[in-house]
Image 1 (cartoon, rainbow, N blue to C red):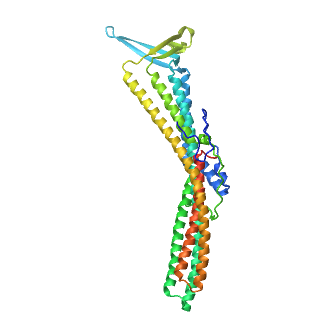
Image 2: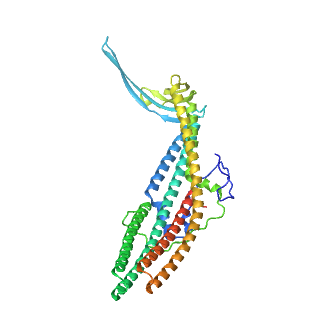
Image 3: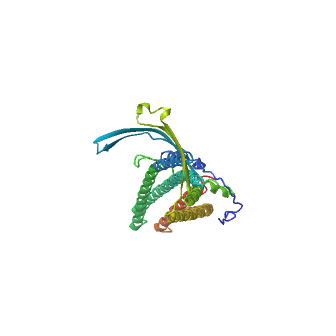
Amino acid sequence: MDLPATFSRGGVKWQRTSKPKVYDRSRWWKVFGDSTLNDLASNTSSQNLGLKAAAARLEQTRALSRSSRTAVLPSLDFSQSASRSTFFFPATGNSIKTDAFALPLDLAYEVDLWGRVRRQVEGANAREVAAQAELAATTLSLTADTALSYWALRGIDADRAMLQEGIALRKESLSLVEARFKAGTVNLLDVSRAKTEVATAEAELIGVDRQRSELVNSLAVLTGRNAGSFSVGVNAKLPDVPVIPSGIPADLLLRRPDLFAAERNVAAANAAIGVAEAAYYPTLRLRASGGFEGGDIGNLINTDFSVWSLGSSLTYPILGQKNIRAQRDAAVARHKAVTEEYKQSVLVALREAEDGLKGLDYLRKQEMTQTQAVKAAQSTLNISRERFNAGLISFLEVVETERTLLASKRLAASLHTQRLAVTVNLIKALGGSW
């Protein structure tokens, strides 16, 4: 494929490889240093029912691969037989009964002149490794989903804490306005506004609690547990975002198990073309048989009743050429399809890596700017309260500054949560680590 020389961050060179390996033992979530996430991700990788199903499919593919490898070996069959025949002579009215017993061993071997069997084994091996890579890809995807749900939950906990703080401040403002209303310094409209702000924030908190409940249930399913019987403790403090190394090596994409699975599917499709091509040519089989035959089972195992035979057969399809050509064309078309799918997977992998690298950079800058906005909003609120207490402004202006500060804090927390989520997506895009 025509790939770029580097990632957009620069300083990275591509490397070619002929023997990539499935990178399926990563415990990438430990980079965040969160014990709860470690437990959740470990439980997902060991208890998720979808992963157990994928593991069973891998065992199925391995068994089929072992079965295909036996095609290169000769077959040896024991086929005992017994029969009784009656011959009737109408002219005399007599009949003769004869018994026949046989204890043969039949040996057969297909001479793989055109590589049909070898290509079958090659394709089976490729499908087995692809299934192994698909299991690793499923593991990476589900553990990433677990981490994303967990950071979304932590973001909601932080948002919830800020809402509770905002409700407490608004209740304080309501008490102050009610006291000043009794003193006759403010009107009833200011009291009504203060009550509206408290009720609005409380209603929003209820909605946040609903979202938290849904995320906890999602984590329960991901970790193979029943929703409703699972809980995650509240933790409103968001951790620092892991530091990305200055130069991400492009060969980390070789760790992506979905790319490796796609490449092995191309190899399997290529082997299928070889199988289809071999059908054009004759099939040569060698046969040998030896054993005992006789009419009396008591004296059957005796050298006088031993028989043996050697032979071969050559089979060539004559009327089936059109069918063979159609099967071959289908195999070529499938190879082309999975090749294009593989190329598409590579392009998607590049996009996901670029999105992660650029997204983290943009979000970091955005969060820094938003932190300055929070400081400015806090200063504005302090000034507006002083001016309100001095009777210079109305309570409406205080309400607006409180809204602005709360919104700024929530946005800053949301940006930090997004950075954690994008970090997870970047790790996933790079195959499970950096």
